[in-house]
Image (cartoon, rainbow, N blue to C red):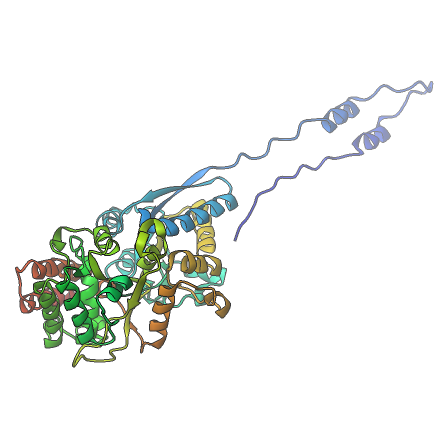
Length: 463
């Protein structure tokens, strides 16, 4: 709720008349001189009003990850929200701190949480390894009263990764799914059919490879990037429930189906389906490989799609990219139409806030989490909404990739989360180490699976 403070000064009149009734005149009828009280009243009537209370200035730190050209649309939205919030709260000034996503998540924020001095507002990942762990340690603000007061508690599509013991500790800014982008001109040039089966997907990869085009752009220096593909292969081979079954102890990393998923990844590595030297390539370099036509496909998140409608980034590939979900795998377990869907990235707020900071946080949430901003994110940045939108808003979507993503989700049998939002931090760190070993030929799929199960059992035993 926005509040403004006003000061009013009441001027008292008629005092001299009141005092004249008490002052009297001489018995000779001569005009009486003004009494001291009357003179004082006259002076008071012209006295300078007391100065208004000086506006209290204060700052609120805000950590975001909207850095770089690919994030410019989302940064513009953030800047508008910041500007509006500052205009509504007297004295408020945000101090923005832009930090690369993985640095914030795995280095800076955990250290700040351990020391008890996180920013007041910060980019936060949901799940057991991040938001729920920080909430348990008492570092996150319980947002339940705020979202209830603002009337938005029931407007979110999924708050499970930020909810613990019935309390909400973070708010997802959008949703995402992960799938395969493909270069339409290259597919047309080499007569490649858009894959609808797993066999057709591998056939497409073989055709690209024979024509000296890398089948899949990949940058695995940051191990979370290949882990996106691993997660979907796990969902296909071992079934969608594998993601929640691992931390629950009902499923195991070294089950045959999980080993089969790692074996397929290893097979693609050995066949040369991924960018040569991928372990030395960063995530942005992967995109460049795809945009320049050096790779025909790229497995990435739906958040990446806004790049392909921006001529400044996509250049000759502008509006010439398609998107498909991972096809069903032969003998895969569970519903093969399910997609990986996440509402796991958003904002969290420090539990250590004074009254002014709480007002700023409430206004920030009001201005960031509403239908207008959600629709802007969808239309300008292709960010899937985390809140319910009406049919009229959804009808405004014109971007072909966003339409493909939303159509795939609509036709799917459901969604499974990415394992980095469900498994414990120690286990996730081990998945990054193990996938890089697999890519580098330093571990077999079975060795990877056994190593992960060992760490998983240790983490589960801590409960």
